[in-house]
Amino acid sequence: MTYDFGGKSAIVTGGASGIGAAIVRHLAKAGAQVLVADLDFAAAEALAVDIKAAGGTAEAHKVDVSSATEVEAMVAQAVSMFGGLHVAVNNAGIGGPAAPTGEYPLEGWHKVIDVNLNSVFYGLRYEIPAILASGGGAIVNMASILGSVGFAMSPAYVAAKHAVVGLTKNAGIEYAKQNIRVNAIGPGFIDTPLLSKNLTPDALNYIKGLHPIGRLGTSDEVAALALFLLSNEASFITGSYHLVDGGYVAQ
Ligand code: NAP
Image (cartoon, rainbow, N blue to C red):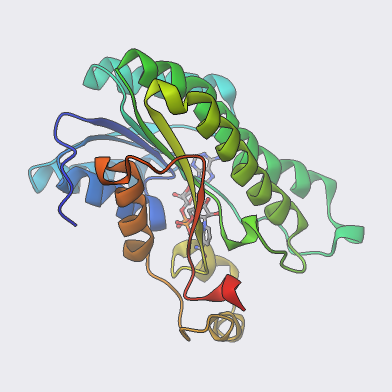
């Protein structure tokens, strides 16, 4: 990846692990100043230290993205540390409980909607004014293949990710003339701690087989699409949803 993010300030939520961490590394390598925002501060700090040792610019920030006030403070922190904001990746997310809709635990529903959907609204709500004040930029929201198709036993996750795609379209059309592009990414199943923490080896094998390519994706493969969408090379792309799924949704 040879994009130039020199002079750009970025926030990546859920930036300490998996897909978020890969996006952080690639943005920093391309010259961005990156706020690694995560619930797991120790992991965010370890990644920021790594990036600084490699000559990049990154700072760790603790945030619970399901809190609007914490998201507002996260954006303020990026602006005060880096002097503005140009790039944001609303990526933090959780899987939630596995149960059919008729038995889904109410507490689990609210938690998944808070962390996977309300968080993206809070991100856009506070990032957009900061990006406007900095002269424009680009936002990527992390949806999923489950932003366009269902997956049994995951009603909250599927509903949240479909809504993230809708929210992305709305923000994309609202700010198209003000030099902010907003896009969503729909990864297939990606080999990250989100999967390895929650699935047995048998379930993982079954999931691999659901992808025509016959394997899970990697965080770097998702980061490649994110960097393109955030870069000036994607200057005519906004309000849209882009799959990186090994053919999953084509079936
Ligand atoms: P991951 O490895 O579990 O990383 C997610 C990071 O977000 C973790 O560091 C986690 O911290 C943090 N986080 C969780 N809740 C948070 C909160 N309330 N506030 C701030 N940070 C929080 O997950 P991933 O697989 O990279 O997933 C990243 C995104 O991609 C998610 O939105 C996910 O839905 C989406 N996605 C993933 C896949 C996949 O197959 N992996 C497929 C499609 C879409 P803790 O570790 O402390 O919880």
